Image (cartoon, rainbow over all chains, first blue to last red; front, top):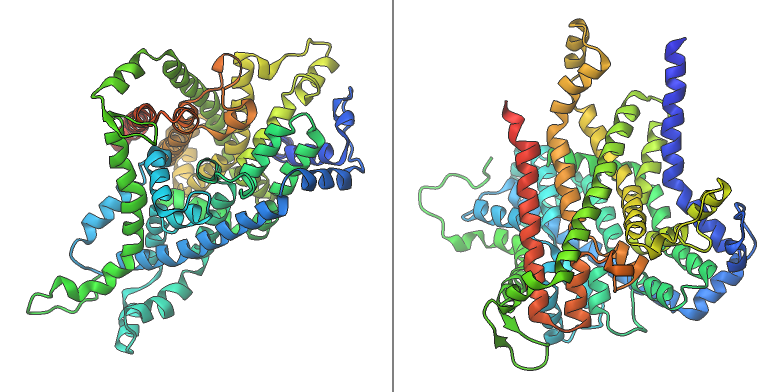
Length: 274
Length: 300
């Protein structure tokens, strides 16, 4: 029966790790449904309370929550759509066509992935000021509209999943370059696009450094920056701040669980191939 | 491979305009928001500028000041200490979990999702949560210590306490992500190799060190490189948990936080640019070291 006990202890260990991963969400929920006084109690209260309504109302009174969430949504959705379009177009071109300078351009693309994003924050801010974009959501969307990682990742996918004959056949059928892209490349890349889309959306939703720098108007923030300022100004009202944190994470977790399988598959394929 | 039919005459570069047009968005954005800021930062490192008055060329003054600046060295030390305190446990836990997960058939999908969720959670929300867990007055950690009859600690009021809180959060957020990556690496190792080892009479430990670990080397390199690039740029965790000052004795001040405060709180742009350049050099140096340590021996 040795294998049996081995199996049980394996699952106990895996389950403990799972609980450690998920416990913070439960504990956030506990703090968000109780009062701050309850949180201060010893021994701590481990059960859900009934204060969620009050706490949510307090969050809404102290920070423009829905406006910030709306801003975050606008940024995340438009960034994701632009990235999917620009990255797939470039990746398809790199994967299936030959033209002068192709290799040099691709090496440049790879090299850009080594640059830490924060490095250029000062001149970037000055550029935004020159464009008149400081404080505007454009400052978040436009610089993020295409990226090297997505092009690199999709190129791998196009190379292995689209046969040259398919592209040739489409060309013979009278499809131009953009026609082949639309009728052959896009439909076959759906799983890869799904991964890149979720990846970009999550990254954009959670982005903090650059929005903190460039969104200078305190009434016009993204969710993460608003949450951080709520934490700084009302740090003592823990149940309210935790409610804000809960409200900021829930939408993303729901989206993630819906797409989890595809996303995890994509994340690992990227690492193994790269 | 190529779709351009063989032609006797040379095609003009302009006849490829569609391809260049397709590639242009990335390169135009990179020129404006990537290359120009980078070059400009390098120039700025040799200048004095507050963002309003005229820029003044000061030679190596910023870098000379950097070498003398104890806060810079403290921030550098904090960053590297935090990097080791978080990356070593993260990758060790991830490797163990991945090996276990690889031998578990049931619930594997559920575990994977559970382990991955911390990674998609907002850094700001997670930092607020971990600050609460490590809070002196009501934190769960102190409640646990009290229940065991141990004295509670002023976690976020002590230099090492701040580092423990920050690295705990990083481990929580990244262990599961790396588990999934290692798991994919484990699953790509051919089964025949394990069967051959079994025939040779190799035990579980020998199999792990002779087959699993060498086969996993490229994946380990990937995780070490990404952890390094991320770890050396740690910003949000300490900034939200202990504030722009870096907390007591500035013990949570990382090098990117120091860059941020010099640039956008003090408006000392030239000096901040010098810090940014040092971050870049540091990332390059660490990536090269990783490459040598983990990747270099792969051919043997």
